Length: 575
Image 1 (cartoon, rainbow, N blue to C red):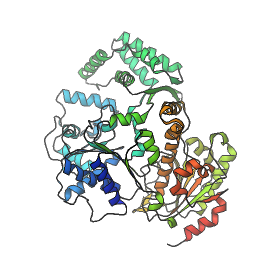
Image 2 (tube, rainbow, N blue to C red):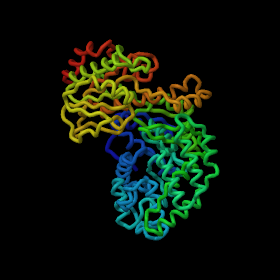
Image 3 (cartoon, one colour):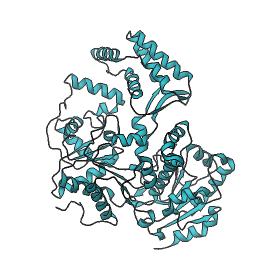
Image 4 (cartoon, rainbow, N blue to C red):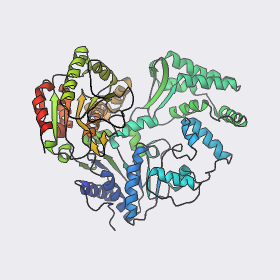
């Protein structure tokens, strides 16, 4: 039976299909890096379905966000329309799949308390779930059908997790502490370039001082005086502390804090009084559980807008990924912006299959012009008003020369703010820290974004399928801002990676940020545009080597104005 859901393969799709299928047959990891627009989801999923039909080994396809569930669901739906019979299940968070719209508006912990109460008291009209055959067209249609059938979509999906041959979920169900059992399954990690950031979010924890204060007041209000005193001790510690905190110090503060009885009694009293069963003491319980996990954590007290926040982050996200995927039959890491060698180095992979389609093998060389401006840098030691002015001048030149939209990507909000005050723009424009981009974009516009932010990942600047961007300017190099947390991560990796530990943390994030930005300009092989790299470090070996498919044949100048004639010729060319 033909598995591939389309009449023919696009360029590179058959390569993806065969590479994934062969790696699954051999039981080895596969690293697939192919640019956006090639149809990698369809190719990977078709190969995986073929493999599971032949072997019976289940497939778990994981994406980072709720929105990213739609492509694999859509492609699986098309595969099934070809007569492929395979049991499937789709799952995201309990709250996102809830049939009660009013409960989806609550904070997550409030929702969990309310959901638990409704289920335990038999007041949920959708619980226990009904046995139905849910059609697969889209995630929203899947959830709506189950709600209409009187079946809780989340509980319905949970019941099917163990036996379904194809499971499509968010990262949570693979990488979190409560992740599904992936032993003897094939796991596909989509958008794999973001997997380490996702682990930091999933295994991190934040608790602000006002939440601790609320927990203290609630304990006192309901007569739990001893517990209140212990909570106040934590509150006082957070109030007087800034910066790195020893995990042992935190554990000693809450080691004897037992909130089980208090939470149970307060919840019961609130239900009796017909108020929301949520109590902020749940946050303290969650903190204690986080501190007792096996994951190595970094703790600090951050100060934001005059308020203190206690934050925990995993020190070695790669180890968390390896542990979460331990026992999987095989793993496919899939991305459009994956620095393959740096990623494999991070995970400690030595034996793997790879398909790494370079940018210049996908986009014809005549379709892009790369400019490297070595006359500027955002290197921290050289930042200042003169640098900000020089960068603004270069962006103004690019705005004037660009016939359509220009996306400028900054390494940080600080640099964006510094450049912005010197950049006078007469066309419609938006900055990432000041409101949403208009839904209907004009023919020419300017967008100021921050690397790895919401304006550079998972967003398209299109109209009727046509890309509206003509230029991407990457201002400086988007290395993460140095921090005690990132420096500790480098230290943790140094015994294993030695001099490459810095690359695994800082260079990896920079390269992902750059490729994400360029990916906004090139959504398909027919797109054309200028890539302006505004920093002399792009001409140095480390970055040049990582970006050789972008930088090969680049025009190197001391100021973008020197390339004005080349840019005009490029935009005036008729291909």
